[in-house]
Amino acid sequence: MIATTGFFDGVHCGHRLVIERLVSAAHARGDESLVITFWPHPRAVLQNGARELRLLTTLEEKKALLAGLGVDRVEVLDFTRRFASLTAEQYLRDILRDRFGVTTLLVGYDNRLGSDRLTAPALKPIASRLGIELIELAPLSVDAEPSSRFLHSLRSVEMTEASSGNAEPEGPLSSEVEAESPLSFRAEPKAESRNLEVSSTQIRKALEEGRIEDANAMLGYGYALTGAVVAGNRLGRTIGFPTANMKLYEPLKLVPARGVYAVEVQVLGQTFRGMTNIGTRPTVGGTFPTIETHILDFNEDIYGLPLRITFLRRIRDEIHFPSLDALRAQLEQDRAACRG
Image 1 (cartoon, helix red, strand yellow):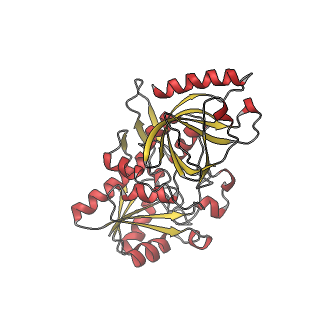
Image 2 (cartoon, helix red, strand yellow):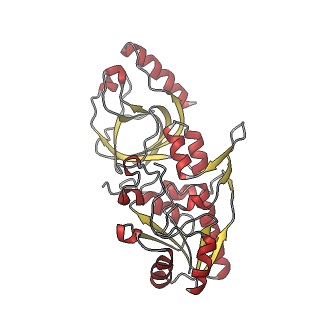
Image 3 (cartoon, one colour):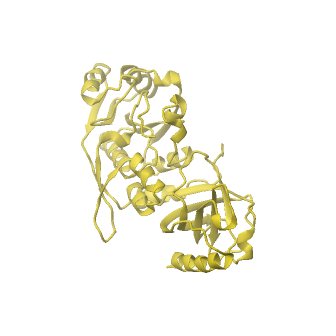
């Protein structure tokens, strides 16, 4: 059994290439590939920046994305305080070798395992003594273009999934597999070529700043939110822009910065263009944040149904307009922009 391990939040381009290396090595050796991940996030258990914790993928999204990369097995371990107390040697011996039969482990050059936070040089003699070959991965150059298999795995995520900081977490894997290298990533097909350091932290930052295209480039797919359509105040209907209010299935899922976005909408087994407003609706005196989506060329009753929105690009900031007429005029421009 050849394995890699980590939280893999976002299953971004860096994670994907690591896992593709895993699958390729397993096939070359006639072995089975295994990804070992954790749930919930270590910060949620250890209270290490838990208040600021926001996730890029739900558990169901993560499992679907990992499976879509051709991995033979995906195992999800329950992250508890007891689990977090395991040393690197205990994790290698008790979990990897004895529980899963791992004979080869792929780790990043600065990956840290165990409560003692050991890196590859310190791990190699321990792994060797336990009969585990340790393969240290060099820094990777990441191609922005996602494979069709990877995109298909994202789109196949069930929309009816169960609802339910920067400090590094402690535990058997004290940094995500993203920490394997400062990944150099060239965002394509943008006209201006830029290098982006790929990590879940950098993707979260891009989303929090509304830089959707940067986030999508680092992810290798379009960032998405999934939830149920709930009742709103129906004000949008009165100005010709009915909206679907979303309640997220995963409360810890990261919501992008306030503003208006061009999105792709999946509902009723179909895909539509749409525009989503994230914010408090200041023009109508709103006081709490909402996620409202106007679905283009659509007029169905979908209250209570699952909805998935995939972010394509940011149109503008949220604005306080002097009147509903001014708001309507701007929404007309936004809708035209989303059709473009």
